[in-house]
Length: 91
Image 1 (cartoon, rainbow, N blue to C red):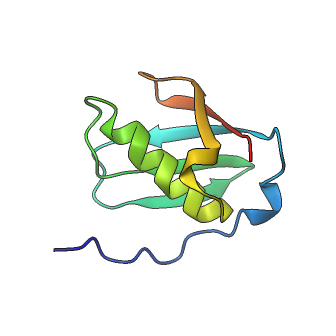
Image 2: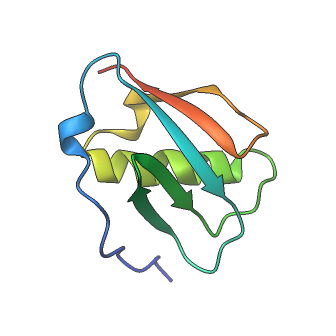
């Protein structure tokens, strides 16, 4: 069964500039996948568990969808095992 299409994702395409760095607060094993922006902080909740990079990959895919870019253009620079993560955008 395919994953349901996500709704209500914020449009972050204006932030997709070459060399941009995104600081995210991540919550793994959430009830549902969602992205929100509160006080300039991007918060991401994913249903994936934080094991073997599954949550990091899920965050990468969600962020890419919000930015309107390919997931391969986003690189996790810091926070592989932390809740605060830094992703960089290199087209």
